[in-house]
Length: 373
Image (cartoon, rainbow, N blue to C red; front, side):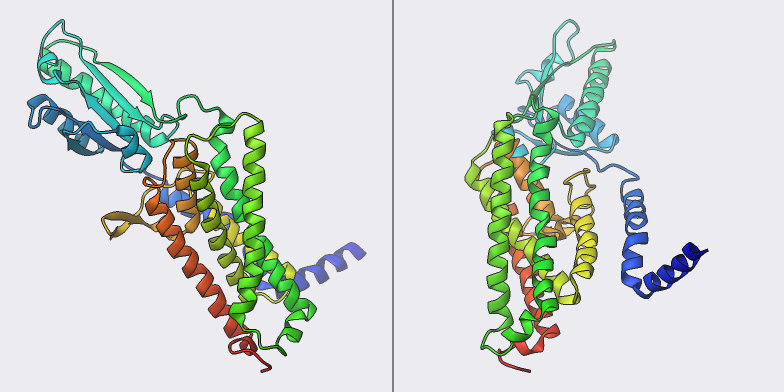
């Protein structure tokens, strides 16, 4: 049959492109393996326990109970502003014990009121809240010698308590619109390589830095425009930002620079538009699936930098972008609460773009100093 001959010829041709076959066949299984290994056990919720009476026996029992069920607990006396702690991602749950918690918890017939504050849409918050309620009831039972329920009031930060499914996905959609720049930037540069434009530019005094800065500027404009249009559509459909839009746009610009840098890295190792598209697809999977845009990601600590915990997925700029946009748009964070995200994205954006310029210059050596090779 002629179809059989076509099949054999097409298969031989396809197998010559080992990179393309590998990315097509192995990308999804590789991510399934990574997710299966990393998501086997959920990360421990982080709880800040605000106990007005420092060193109280009941508060200490609550702390020990939470640690006993795998919750990371920090005990503080200053009630401060729990919203700021949560917007800065310093914790997942803030538990406010009442001024007379120590006395009421051990008196039969007395009501014990506790306020739990957090991003109620977060899985970490829900796990932490369940743990807190269970431990509080157990401590109350031990103190009174009888079954006693603690009255727990949940307070949502920002709009997390009333957000619709659409509201919850808007920050992720904005991040996704920026990630698309990996495709756009890599294919724009590769198209000029493939069409011979780059060969003509070699005859000028242009350097690789000049060329890539100019090309990247266009892509950053496109990315920023996409974010503004996406946000505008979301606003028309009822979305409302809880934080300053200027902060969100600053995050978007820095995110665009990072993704354009990733696109330049792709362009430096590909010479055809189809190959650039294929490699960009793998990069897109990496940025989308491992940065919390679609699925929550586990904390995999690598160490601390400047008092800030640094995790494995923090090496991706879109991790900081997704975290920052969620904090601003949903939790109402301002410049102060996302300064770490802004600094991290500026550093990673510079690193990605610098790596792209260096790699591109090595591939097209005539651009290193300008002029013909």
